Length: 584
Image 1 (cartoon, helix red, strand yellow):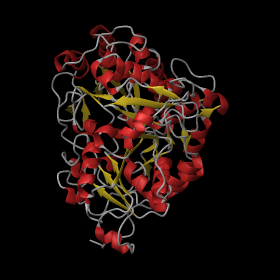
Image 2 (cartoon, rainbow, N blue to C red):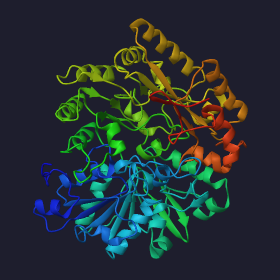
Image 3 (tube, rainbow, N blue to C red):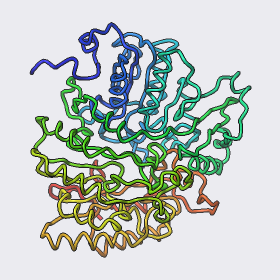
Image 4 (cartoon, helix red, strand yellow):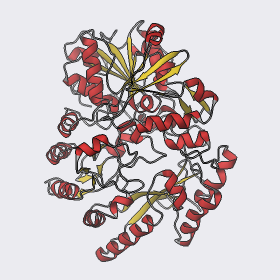
């Protein structure tokens, strides 16, 4: 085996640090995922950005979380430890909707479970303090973002305070952290205060909490104690947080917790397309770290794909994406995407197929407001639900042009869209939808109708009941023209709050009538900070209307078994031939 280039990765070993001529580091990044040097992995992305800004950065991926010495590879960091649980919440990574241990961790070598601890942000923060007494600790990533205020933990079935409180970190970075983390470490480097940084939360000490005086730009959230003791308080909290997600008009929030003040600064103004381009084009190897001998399943899935857009305009009630990335879209320029794919085509594992050009959805690239001033003043929770905002420009031309440019590249044979296609947008983008179905489907296309009952869809903040059938007719008609055998892979959610057995049967009857065997069904998981979670806890709609909520595993079993049947393999699916299909 050829000797690895010790300067090609952000240092993950002492030898790599010494190869750069460093005798120590400024910042230690600790991640709950294996180290894959790729911009879709959050911790390596932040590491590359900080390295590019001139900081000496080291990464320790999935340390032994019971041994503080596992963090001492580079010695004591000069400035701080920056912690991320990984690309998804650690509890979601470890446990299923049935609160059982998963059999595979997609973000670990060979899918090995147990490499990332439960509540990893808290565990790693405590480990860092044990390893380096008095060190500054900054937490961020999806887990910290969605747990930034008092929240419900489904797997523990209890209310918890902000993860900042539990972790005793100095600061919590929420949302897209590229610019926020830069500002944090630039301030630490200059020995400046970490107060008043957008996209962060601070837990004020006793003196600061006593002297804190809210002004007209502050809104008080229900206290942690209220959320813990009153099941309706989480609904009040969620509505306030949702109303203050637009960074241009959001107010500062605060929450009383254990006799002190948790202060949540407004969200950060989104980065520009030019900044997005720059960050994605930093000198990533786009490979797992050379020290791994086995495969990392998450990288195997995305190694040939390109993320071209951040943010989601949908605001679905069950999804935490809008609480983390926001609803304002940032799209990379076509020139940047072409440069990235040209670089990808030089990789030895590349065989001419781009597996995905997408993001939160496969058909939102290049969308933008007609008038930015209207968008900056907007208080809507979704650009698309319950109807399309008149200021939202769902322009299909940018993605059509991008697909044409990429398809024309010399070493590219196939370009696919494997990110889920939004049905509501697909129906108003006829040229793009036909182009995708004709030329950019890898045999199957993913869509997420989630449900087919009108009332449940409304409560989910999804589209209308007939959209899936409309799309299916378009899909079949185009395939008939081209003579291609292609398939739709729809995703449905069982046990969403307010969904009755009768309403779930609407989906079951449709599938039976269509002789459809599902590849995947998601049993509802109330993710922290989502409206679906608030509905689950409060057992009401946002307007206070009482609803039926299935909570116990026995209660939830009926709806799930309508769609997936009783016998499953370890992936939750019955195998038929070389594909995994559920048995109905």
